Length: 190
Ligand code: IMP
Ligand code: MG
Image (cartoon, rainbow, N blue to C red; front, side, top):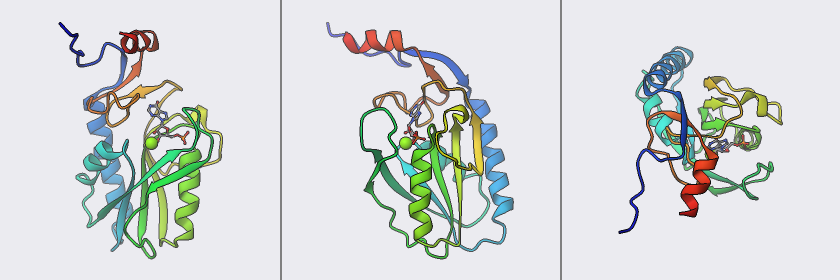
């Protein structure tokens, strides 16, 4: 009989951030954004697909201000290593000129993605632009960027869950976990 894939996966290492911790932090971020955008009439949450989907849908429910959301889909040009060259697979629909934009991503690693997308968005003349990331591998930054709203700072581990994936696996885990790459290698060689 064929082996059925176990869930949660065998390759999950350690739970680094629990579901409860995420809920609490997302609530706090929402409250902070609510305060900071009290006077904003045009607030746009602009998420990067696909990793930020779970975060953005939770966060927006904790923001007590009128808002709209939009998405961009971005990919790195080459392989797994961040190169700084990114390609827009799908652009946002909103004309962001005059909007208070919060750019939202799941995780910042080298920072190239945020750095590049931020520069592009500024050319489109939003009224304001801030950056929000669920996770930040602060020791891995290779460019100078500011994260205005950060969920958690984490060490340089590869993580999955809460929207983040390893080769499309693990996005629907409700917590953030490290990956055991020994076990992962075995699981893909089965
Ligand atoms: P950066 O451009 O190097 O900052 O890379 C950011 C992007 O790389 C994120 O939007 C994620 O898609 C991906 N990424 C970086 N680290 C991880 C990780 O630990 N797990 C899953 N995806 C990651
Ligand atoms: Mg991403």
